[in-house]
Image (cartoon, rainbow, N blue to C red; front, side, top):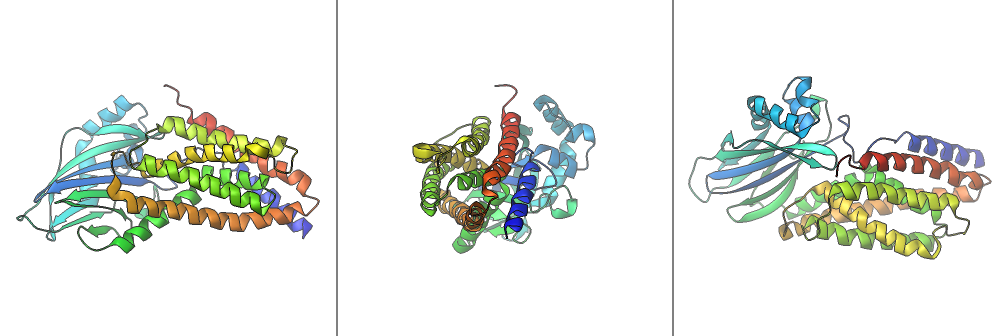
Length: 373
């Protein structure tokens, strides 16, 4: 048993060392999230899409000079000279129908580029002309960046809409690519955002490492309960405020602080000698860092409009997905750490687990610091 636990700790440490790459994930062997805001009345519909720039240029089968462009000015130039190819790709994979009749899309204005974290996103605006009179029903579909393109997998399109007074939100994915505005789909919407929140925590390795660092330093079940409660309360506050536009903090500030929070907690595990390595500062530190992590969770949805109260149900579902997944991780990891502490391996296990966390987080911290302010 001792040998197995020691081997498990070594394997986990190696895996942590291998995570030294920027987060949130920008790698194209992972996934991406498109954003779509659809507004309109009657037969006139406007769609604003936020799509990861280099992925869009690759999917439109453009040359490397287009998708490898790093400077914003050059990215804007490439979007201009490749306007037709970009428009053809988007309109083939994003559709609006009115009374089951396809609406005709036309790109309006010039495309823009804006950062989401450190990743540039192309902002493309389309006008859809629909046939028919007032009182029709809308259907919105997205097949952007499918698995078959091989650049990414499990792409989701975050949709918010305001059409003829009907407001709502949805997550469009391969298994459910279409939403019909006005249908009773509350239960489906709750499930979609719940899964989105669960996926964000699981694939948001910085949040997972922060949680692991906290568990390494918490020896008693009471520590775990208090720590998890403080973290949950803090990040729920800022998540909801930020996602609804009440609080706005740039990702260039939030993301380095998230990485720094992991470093602080992991170093406390390495340097502390008390049973509770954060001591009486545990709750204030966890609560403060929880506030910052909540801003990071909100950044995953990238909802910019203030007063997004119509999204409240979706936001709560997303947050519950985060919380449930967090509890599952605690239920799995904490008993293993308890068993490890009952073996002779406990003396070096803390260092074996904490050092890789510090190194990975330090890399993230340096990578996330903007070169220009």
